[in-house]
Amino acid sequence: MVTVSPSLQHAWQRGCDFLGTDLAIIGGAMSWISERHLVSALSNNGGFGTLACGSMTPDLLRAEIQATKVLTPKNFGVNLITMHPELDTLIDVCLGEKVSHIVLAGGIPSAPSVKKTKDGGAKVMCFAPTSAIGKKLVRMGADAIMIEGMEAGGHIGPVSTSVLVQEILPELRNVPVFVAGGIGRGDAIVSYLEMGAAGVQLGTRFVCATECIAHPNFKNAFIRASARDAVPTVQIDSRFPVIPVRALANEGSKKFMQKQREVIARFECGGLTREEAQLEIEHFWAGALRRAVIDGDVKTGSVMAGQSVGMVKEEQPIAEILAELVAQAEKALEKRGYKWIRDAEFGIKDKLRDAEVGIRGMKMPKGIRDMKMPKKLFPSGS
Image 1 (cartoon, rainbow, N blue to C red):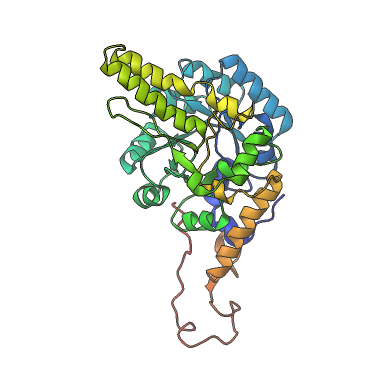
Image 2 (cartoon, rainbow, N blue to C red):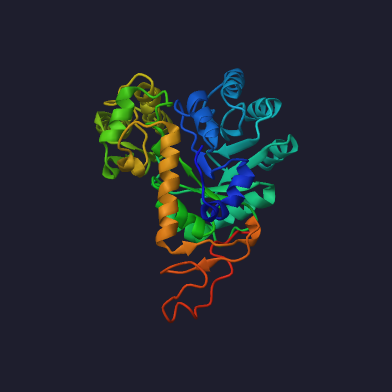
């Protein structure tokens, strides 16, 4: 298990308390990837794994939750897509299996879905694309909010993580907020914690974990890729909207653009109705993610990846990845000059920030000696 300093522990204590974990690091739900093996490995090593339900049936989800419980006694969550036709039944399955946290994703959840989840004893986590929607979700009963920027892999919004956190974190203090999108190092984690985040969510960084079942071709594509290779799908015509998905550019990406042009030409010639044309475009990627992840078809399959893919250099055990992230975070804190000598919330009294020494009583340069120390180095949000 990774050892965490009092400094870092203080910074993300709120997130750890909410998740019931040692580290406030969530494994993002990735279809075909975030299954029992990766999820249990994350939870067993101090993080928080999240099962991706995707299009699973209730019976399949129940079996996957039970299989995950065999592999870990620790907390883990389940990510449910709000557009799933059997959402209510899936919530029942999670509640019946005593899942501690349920993430309602893929759209704004209904108030009844949030209430049902909370009434059943699970904590509700929701994604907020704006500050106003975040506040609305909290009023509906969300226990925590997730912010995910366009740097993330898979389905994305139009705004970057760096902008979203500036917009949302100062406005949402009454519930824990977790930041996602483009995070690949511990330095970035510390920056978001300083801004008021309770913790973070990473997905791309964990794809090349040894515990991940993704095909070797899929993992090798990640290891070879740079940030600039992870691009959103291109929409050819605004009359036929395409939900942006960030993935590694490949032959499939080129064929998708060709497909759009062909379909639009047939529509303009009267060979297809608008609805038929839209459906044909949407069906192009059907099964493409599974082909890439499970079958290893990284040429025509959908290799969903975030821009942090450039920081994935090799296949590593989850324990090693988490240890690296924590070590980077600790080093970032040290560079900032934070020397936590005593902290009232840990049974220690004082905090010192001393750029030169950091030990009370030792000689310090004039100016630093007379500095007024901040009462709190990290906003706790409570």
